[in-house]
Image (tube, rainbow, N blue to C red; front, side, top):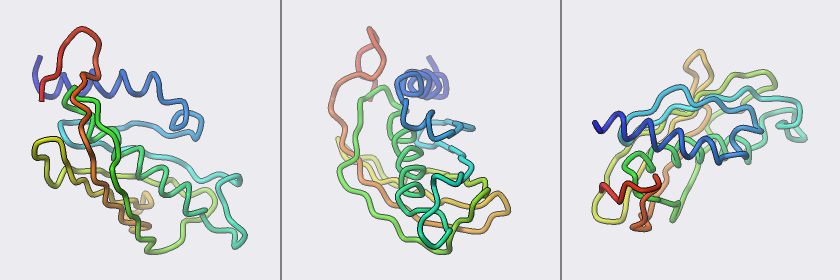
Length: 146
């Protein structure tokens, strides 16, 4: 299996079990080793008392992109620490795109950056996630391929 095929298989396995991302209307639009792109449209249920995108939903979109990016190697990997910086408010109806990329992956630890933008390219938030591999395969019957 090529690294791209492995990333796609891992993403499919995760997507099949990820009811949170699915129920929020997220769409996985790109996957590659150490990378993922997810998108989501902000609905009325995702707005806060100011009528802007609630930060928790922005965080969730970025966190989902982070999760898909760091789980592309068939090693079950979880978040160890995450931080988000909100740049500008999202608005009802915005189509947001979260682009995750691997910065570093050494041993069981990884660092991933996620940029959340509107479709027009306006940056909404920057997210950094630190991951920790659990040394268990994500895919059944394949063994870890770290």
